Image (cartoon, rainbow, N blue to C red; front, side, top):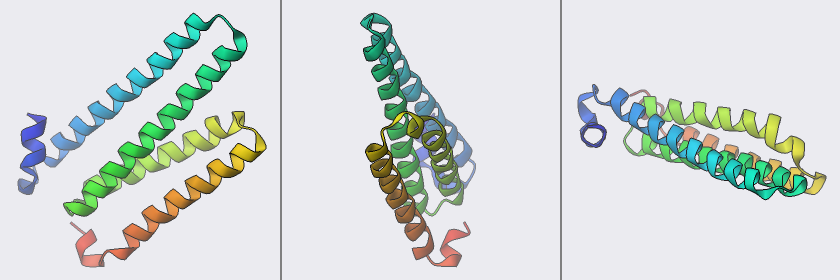
Length: 140
């Protein structure tokens, strides 16, 4: 059903179904990534390794969410779907908030600088892509 809705997006009624399917895939893969790292951490038995695996799980979630947000935004640009672009930007904002509040807090100073630089470059790329499109093309 979701694949059919995603392929037949021109009627406008299937866009919410396709976004819902994308959301379920995002949530399911996030849950799977998080449980993989937490299960490894519970088996470690070492406090330092447990903390490192927990941090790796947080980082994996941020990377996964960034990939999903990029794909959703790119699909919105490619198929000229405003709802997909907005959903991608909302997911980028959620990822940014998570990265700034949770991920950056546990990094050393050098890695914080690198992470913020990469995050800034990604946000600049998204903003540049969004502004590059003609205004009438973005209104759909």
